[in-house]
Length: 266
Ligand SMILES: O=P(O)(O)OC[C@@H](O)[C@@H](O)c1c[nH]c2ccccc12
Image 1 (cartoon, rainbow, N blue to C red):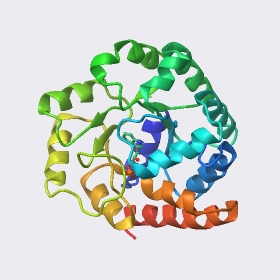
Image 2 (cartoon, rainbow, N blue to C red):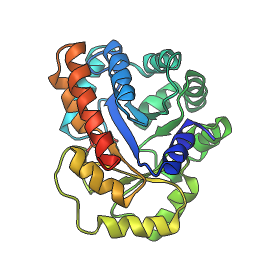
Image 3 (tube, rainbow, N blue to C red):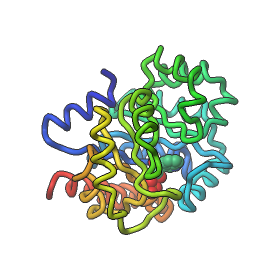
Image 4 (cartoon, rainbow, N blue to C red):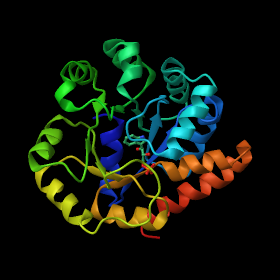
C-alpha cells in the first residue's frame, strides 16, 4: 500500500472522508509553497495535489491559470518541484499527488520523470491530457515503481469508459463534478448523486469529487455522495489574496480547517 491508499483506508476505518487540497506549486514561489503545504497539513488536509504550472493547460479555469502564470514567472520547473517534494519529505508523510500536463513529462522523459518523482517521494500523478488509451508506456513505468496513476471521470463518461478507467486507475478515481473548467460554482447538477452511484457500482476504487467546491457546504454535500473531495481554486484564490506568510497561515489555515470539520460532520 502506498501513502494514498493507507490514508484513505485509515480515514474509512474512522468513518471519515478524504480532503484533497490542490495548490499550484511555485505560486507565488516555491518557498511559499513549502509554507502553504505545512499550513494545509497542520489544518487537516489528507492529500495534497501539487499542480505543475504549464502555459497551455487543458481544463484550468482562470484562477488556476493565473496561478500557473505567477509560478512560471517565478522560475518554477518540474525539476525544482521534485526537489521541493524531496525537501517536504524530510518532515512530512502526507500523500502527495502531482497534477501535470503531459508536455512537462514528455520534455523530462517519461521514465526519468517516474524514477525521479518516486525518488523524491511523490505518491501519485494525474495527467489530465494523457488519456488511458495513450498511456500504456507511461503506466508501465509508473506501475513498475508504484507511482499511482489517477484517472479522471466526467459526467459524460459512458459505462464502458467507467469500467476501463476503473481497471487502469490506481489510488483513487477523480470524478469531475461538471462539464467545463476548474473554478468555483455554487450548485451541483441534480444527477451528481446518481452518477456517482453508477460509478460506485462499477468500481471498488475510492471516488473523490472535484471541480467547483468552494467552501464547507459544498464539500460536505459532495462528500456525502463519495469518498472525499478535491478543493482547488478556492485555496489558490486565498493564496493570491494573502501577502505575507502570517496572513497565509491564518486565512488558508482557517479555510482548510473549516472544510475538514464540515467533512467530519461538525
Ligand atoms: O479548482 P476546483 O474547481 O476546486 O477543482 C479542483 C482542480 O482545480 C484541480 O484538481 C485541478 C487543477 N487543474 C486541473 C486540470 C484538470 C483536472 C483537475 C484539475
